[in-house]
Length: 617
Image (cartoon, rainbow, N blue to C red; front, side, top):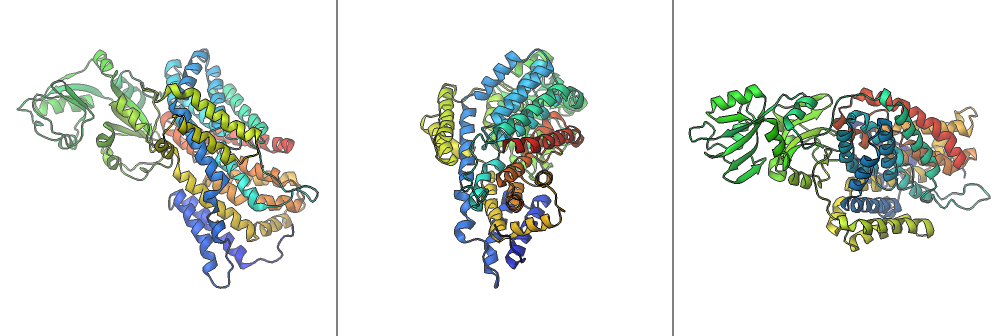
């Protein structure tokens, strides 16, 4: 391939858009998917300027939406949802509980290996969201602090994504980048035909094994003991005090006609200074858990109040309430139907940046917001005005049946283990057969990956494992638009000649460095990029440059490309990865915990990645 000798205005336009993309991702000026669509439209707008040739034609500009990568990721999300609805995670929890009660090291080894294998065939953020209640159950049964389990599980979920070419978005998009490149690996070989499903598996196995061994041997030494466990159906008051430092009591108060709150709405009562929270009220035999804030408290009703003990006493005296503190045995009895849970705001939730009051938890989910855990602080005052961040943990009180409904909403991740019914346990064999059928098509036929996975997803729908509406709901359209909109960016960098020009500049300043050293530098660059932007964005930007560098060096482009794609999964140092953001709140981690443990994991990852990729490719 002949590299361009002159720097053209089209190259300048492509590189300017790359720089603007990096700025958008780092600054978080817009949502990441909005930024990606904006970048795609800017690429298309270049051709409107006089004297500049279009970077892409209209068909290429929107080719990402019909790409093999995007269709594959949609299908894998549907398949993952089908496996979830048949109770596969619950079965995994039962097996792990039966096998892993002996020592902390054995529990950690089995948990990390299991989540790694699951993440090989579904998005790691989805796998960790499903697995959080499993880890909660195991932590509560074993007595191991959650902080010594969630980082190992989260990191190994990321590592598990390197086991197959469908395990993470950066690997899924790789074949599409190669399709656009269209070059021979060497002058004597035909065009590269793309990576097969398990081409990356030997590398992923070594990476996952290193993570499992690392946490099994050294996790207890390196990981913090925050003393946190996720809520279980026991004593709500004791749990709030021990875990979050919220010294609370539960009072049952009977409302008389002379009471100062008789005839007022829940909103009027709770908005007063130092007022307790009303978890439920009963009139006759009717009990309303987490009553609507517009409901009126009538005489002869009985309220269940939660608050600081002194505030509760003063509130009862001030409003002439016949109130008593519930003893532990009655609190536990009430937990059979309702109780406390932790719900995490995941990356991509529509509620990020919105106030807690805007969610209207009571109206839509019959859930009372008790507190918001953020970093190492538990917020309790004026909660409705608090603007939510990714990773915030909401402490909710609700019926378990209502919590099960909330858990189906992709804007929340229920971290606590709670009594619930699996939606379609009888369909578990069908879901497994559909999954294995899709894998068989990938392994034993020449059909495209998207075709094979779509066949498995459609099988889930036809067999009744999941309805079509549920299939639509299972897709993270934010991820789809991000991926589809960024694919044209990589294509524009390649077709404009910018990738080849950059490769020439790098080589001219490398003073004869070997291909092995340049490969290592690309891995470091990809690791840095993925910490400040999405792994898909880092892959799309760097793979075309890596391919051009490999061609100029006479090295294997597939080796350089797979190195970059895998290095974008090396995101352990700070909690910017979606998985790390999700586990930070429930375990009470600090950024320093990720820096300490993730720093070692980052170095270990790079030390393993370079020699193993060279051995495999």
